[in-house]
Length: 84
Image (cartoon, rainbow, N blue to C red; front, side):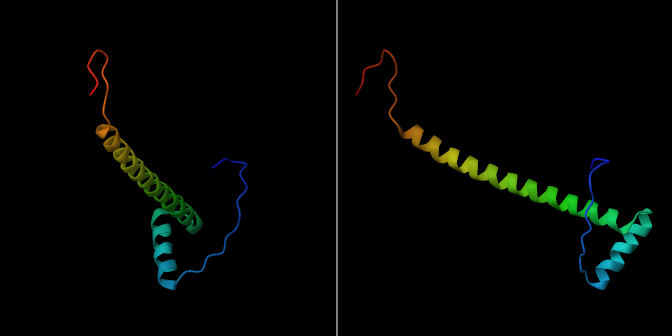
């Protein structure tokens, strides 16, 4: 995050037990609650991006597999070999 980047205030409602757990983590690490929340959101978004990329890769490999299978079934003509 850049030094001149503007921060925006976000209000989030959470159950008391989550706020208590959050405060324990923040206090134990000597950090502010907002730092822990910000880091948690960044981590969550990064994980979502990884999942999306993984899903796109799976889909791409499946599409390539189908293409490769159809190419493997096509007759090939080699230079110098008689055609059927």
